Image 1 (tube, helix red, strand yellow):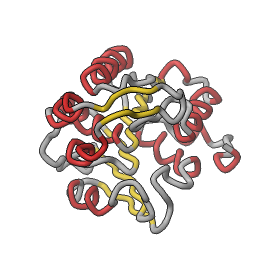
Image 2 (cartoon, helix red, strand yellow):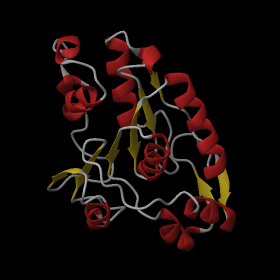
Image 3 (cartoon, one colour):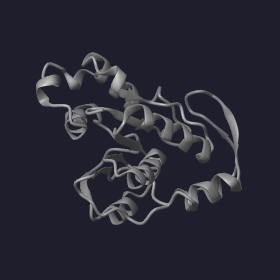
Image 4 (tube, helix red, strand yellow):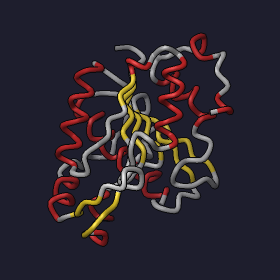
Length: 202
């Protein structure tokens, strides 16, 4: 489905996150809500990937938009299916980061508590792919002020892709709403469809 988008949220996040909410609002205002999926992902990577594979099956060939850990999932899926991906402050090799975080976790939006185990880390490691090399299929948006992930890791890993690096910002990616026209365009949604939207008001 041309113009379809699959948004993949990050670690301990949800469809209620700010970026997801802004994207949902725009797609609904364009009358394209049916072409967007924002699944509430299970905390275990294997179950999350099953959810994402189902969403891809429903949408056809969506643009994958992945934030943080969602960027890692999106990279794996884009390489597996030959899809386009737009990654926002993506996590690189998150299984190496999570070793120090084993134990109880709490979702920031749902208050769900769960246990991060070695099996989560193993499942994440299994999703790692060689660094992508196609700037036509990958856009990577980074902000240097990301307090959660070192943007330079993503800058290095995705160096062969189309990189957009902004000074400052934070892990949530400041100013995401104003960048949505570029996201929509990458998804194949033309400016004629969204020129009446005030993105700054989102």
